[in-house]
Amino acid sequence: QVQLGESGGGLVQAGGSLRLSCAASGRTLSNYVRGWFRQAPGKEREFGAQITWRSDSTYYADWVQRRFTISRDDAKNTVYLQMNSLRPGDTAVYYCAARSITATQYTNWGQGTQVTVSS
Image 1 (tube, rainbow, N blue to C red):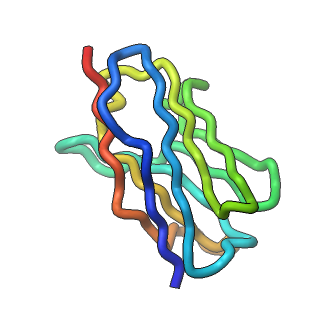
Image 2 (cartoon, rainbow, N blue to C red):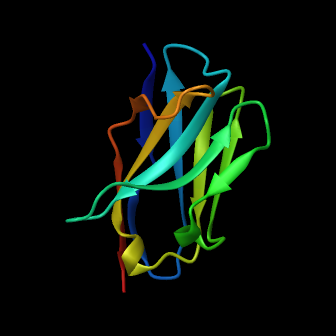
């Protein structure tokens, strides 16, 4: 069973940066897609970015606007989300997720990490 665990959230001022980490345990997620989502209070969870394991294929939601970068460390089975130029509107719980490259929906989720951006 794959377990995902996020870290790196916290409180930051507008314009600042944070780097989120998502470590996978239980098995090596080869042939998987790893993604980041977020859910703000009163809103639905929304997709942010994804990266395909063992490739350089990435995809971002429009709202990211080139402020965030997803990357991976194969040796650590970990995915990162570097977030720059943070805005108060980025305040949310950020979740990492994983799915098989052949799946259409994400099947594994972390517990989430809170990101709060103050103005």
